[in-house]
Image 1: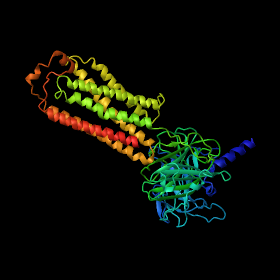
Image 2 (image 1 turned 60 degrees about the horizontal axis):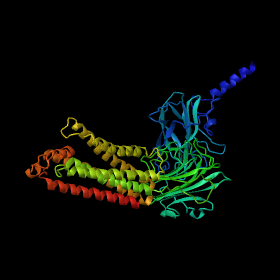
Image 3 (image 1 turned 45 degrees about the vertical axis):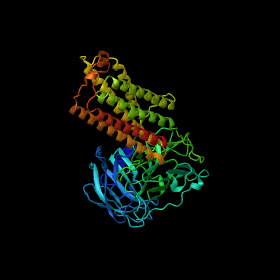
Length: 603
């Protein structure tokens, strides 16, 4: 009985150590509340410290910044307690001072991290009551010049059983107003003490579009990484259990949108096509050096091999595929990781590698030759043949009477279908006859099926068009026209643009601009065909009468009439104008198709 009472008293005393009026002095060093028998949450905290008021180039010594502790607007999770400090890296000194702007929830706490450290009267802020709040603001005054890099460290209590401890912000530099120079990169060590990947192969220094290298110090338990990119944006080095994106440990070296600074982060990639998220704890990233000069970004840093983050992979053991990706930075001052999709398709090693393997890195470089030939056939099909065949049927019945327009339409559309199927066979050969479906090509494949099915359906329903004076001929005209012009032509043209976007991700960086030019041409062609279609329709509505020629009336026999739906075989008086406009259109479309095909071929 006495033992039970004693245990109960101890539990009560420990429970009372959760201070409703703020963290005690004993928590100054560890920032850990004593909430026995509960333990801190291992998941990332939904309640974070907003540091967006501090410039990305770094804090200005002795300047004040408004900070906010809270959850996002979509969550608004309340919390009862907190303790926040700013500490230097890597010396772990308590620096800066807080100014309380809301005495209803926050107060200062005197702290001394160790017996030899001075007492800081304003370097720690904590709560002063147990009331729930969704956010709290205060001012932070930066330390004097020469303090160097620092991090904010804090703990947050949602309730007695739910709390997060030792949350660390990204590293915050001191704004010294100078470029942080990096001593020479270690290209000479490639293949001996460092694993290296450079694009293009074996480039040197700023001649590289981008590069990544690393060395391992297994005795001290860290990996040292160097990354460069020859333009503003980001470069990422990933470690993955397979050769597919998702569930990856990714290091990011990223320039800010203002072009003045570089951010280094340990991030993770959970799913394809989602921006990387920064690890909640960044304390395993150290010795950060960076440079951003003349649009060239460089960074060097170290990370512990085992990693301290929730999603970090233990690089000291196991084999991992390496990913190398580059992209453009997103706007905004708060960078969560990779801010935008990669501008080139990521380079992936052909096989998993041990992190200490310094042999030549072999990249899986899929051939795009058949992809380009496939694109060339589809480009010629849908940007030249199909528009010509469709415009013949829509606007040139009056110019080519006696069924000539019909035979021309049939001949061009047969060529369209033949070229279309050749393009289909080429891409199937490239894929070894397999239907390869990934998240980033679903739209292209789905629209491709529509483009192939629609003209085939049009051929079939063409046999059931009936007499031009038939009761349901209007229904055939509607279905045949919509299927051919909308589902076939425009869906195909948009799909080709999607295909060009995918090709842009595959080609080397130095040729990316060629694919971009082909995209501009393809988009211009869609606009030109749309405007031409509108103008031809408007002209036909305004000028729709034809003057019959008696010498041609005898040619209008029943067979031709039923076949071609041409009741009046007389050419329209505007024959020359229509033919001239048609020739101009054919020349423009042929030029655009050839130019786009050439750009694809040389990219």
